[in-house]
Length: 120
Image (cartoon, rainbow, N blue to C red; front, side, top):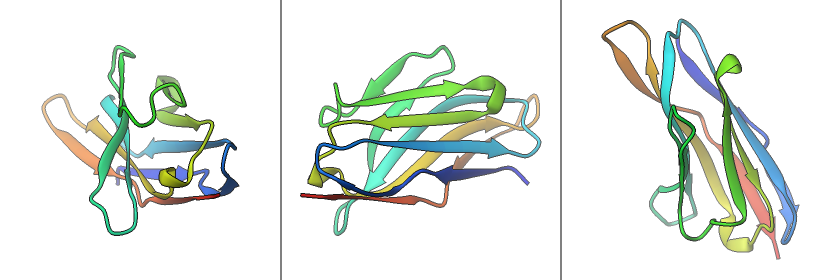
């Protein structure tokens, strides 16, 4: 079974840092796009950052300059380094990945979510 497992959430004071990790496991041939989304209380899920297979990245305007997404293809893992955290960064962070499981079949996977709470 192919799945994504996240780690690294927690409680941090405003201005602090956290690093999220998301590892894909199972029978995987390759992983294309990987990304992080978040959902704040009472709000819709939104894209935070995405990294493509060629390592190009895109960020939400609200996190540019503060967050960095990276990936380790050998470990099938994506990271999100979050610096200068603000209270508005609070939410459940979800990992997302487009996983190639055979030469002609891919799956879009979601992690279980990890809670990030930033206290002001």
